[in-house]
Length: 189
Image 1 (cartoon, rainbow, N blue to C red):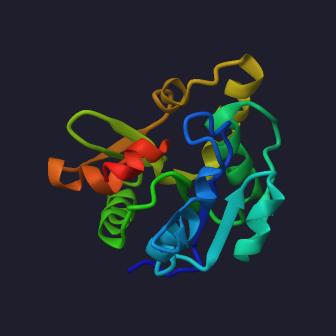
Image 2 (image 1 turned 135 degrees about the horizontal axis):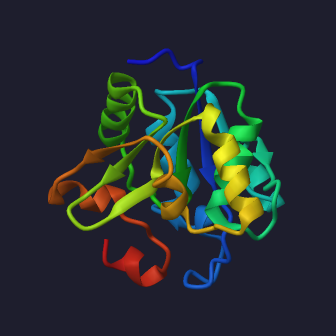
């Protein structure tokens, strides 16, 4: 296991929540919010856990929040804000709508990140790339800032400019990587 002081965890809680109709990270499953479930999965990797959001309702969960430095610019801005805030080189970045993420998945991503020493290491399954389940090196924050300033806000386009390692997961892992952005998807989980 990696020393839990050399990784920071940033959970991106932004977004318009149109499909969910409410703040996704605060939705509860069996009495626990998505954020609490995600924190449960990451707590063995780091005690440096931050929520990237301007929504003060998240303060009730007891984790520090940081706002986007560039408002309404999507996950590219969220990642930039996280990397700009971080005091560690290595950063685990997750979206708030992956409540089923688990230790085993994250452990594999982190180990592969250190093994191959890439700037970004993200999850990939047979049909999707999951750029908001991955490790990001702080040194790439300038790429994200330049993309924001240039108006290139499609995350996958930004990532393709960087040295990326994909951690491939089989179909049995898909349920742990799944974005739950509507109650219909939650009911089908």
